[in-house]
Image 1 (spheres, one colour):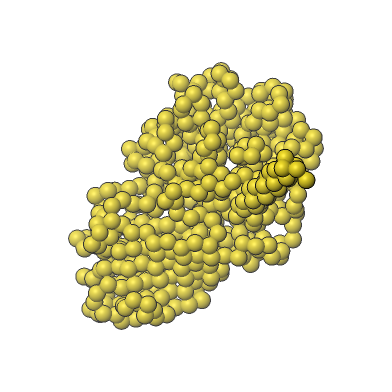
Image 2 (cartoon, helix red, strand yellow):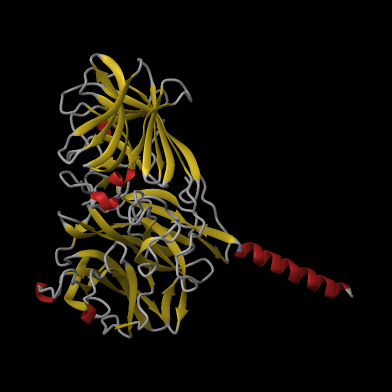
Length: 554
């Protein structure tokens, strides 16, 4: 064999090995674990940006960046200033619903719905990390879930609205409608048109057609949207037209994504799939980013609706999500290289990290309804110092609360708190919080003049019932909450690693979305309150440590 032949064989073998190595890049679902619902994704050049709903948490609408659809880093929040908006007097499950992100001529656009307040609005930025503009409200755009579509120099806004003439034929009867949109003046143009009435097949009484997007490909306009409601009957459907204004003809094999037909008792199930957006991956193939949930024991889940990914195949001119499997997979192999993010907190799979509070707050941390920078301070010595407030997390105000999402079914959250109560009304500690009426709270307080660690459970009457308590000494106290699927346990320690059980087997279904009847997921919160009494006391939290690991293999 001559030198040239050997060289060709070597190059071919190298290419095969290289391609094999690239093809083994694994994306693990969910790509954003925990309460990251209603994803919207955008590609600009080689960069991807993704945003999610946050309801009444502040800051609102996190912005993530990626180069590979696998590794995501939060780079900011769309709603980051109280001057943009707040959610005071709103329940946690209200607020910001279903944002969508777009880009045109160097400007980034986010459309969203502020439920119970101003309705649909648009904000803009020249950098997706922010700052974003104050909202421009769109009074003509009724309903929810607006998204923009740019087609050359033309722009359109598509959204969910009431049934025609506001006369529904059945509960859940909705429409998809569209206006032309002026992206400079940020206002609608011309007349509104109904694109879809009811859903794919009105005779079957489809419910909650929502979260619409339009994609142009091969001279077709593809209108795709969620249908069936955002629970176990959730799905994604698609229609197409040769004109952006329709008429839109449904795909005869709809839905293009759902899990509602699968056995409820299947192992490690993924359910409630829908609210998808399609995006071109680094390999030129199409991928769907969508919401789904990981329930335990039926339809209970505490981690909220999460962000998932699946490949898309174009079959006979139609996009079909996850075509090679009946079930959405926990792992997909893709044909391109992984690009890791510098200094990014992990978002998928098993991970652990510690948040400290020396200089600035992590952008993923959450306040209730607004932010008051005068109510807390950061420092190397004491960490995060919160002023105790009379407000409690059972009310609709802005209590002293800073939280992070529960991102695993099986996880542990630890804090170290420096706090001495002056009365039994004053408490500081760690809560696992679903909403105003569904949380557990382990805290340091006083009872009969003695420092104690207490465990409370919320009630529907805006009170807390004491479950257990133990006497502790003065000085720093470490608190821990452990989640194990449908159970939670609470521990405390006065010395490092000297953990004592306060209470185990707390009912986790009490914190589930199903029991709370909400749209959000659980949050571990550093929380301090004087329970309605005036005070000047403070509580300092040295760190928040988180560790989680789930079985994500089917």
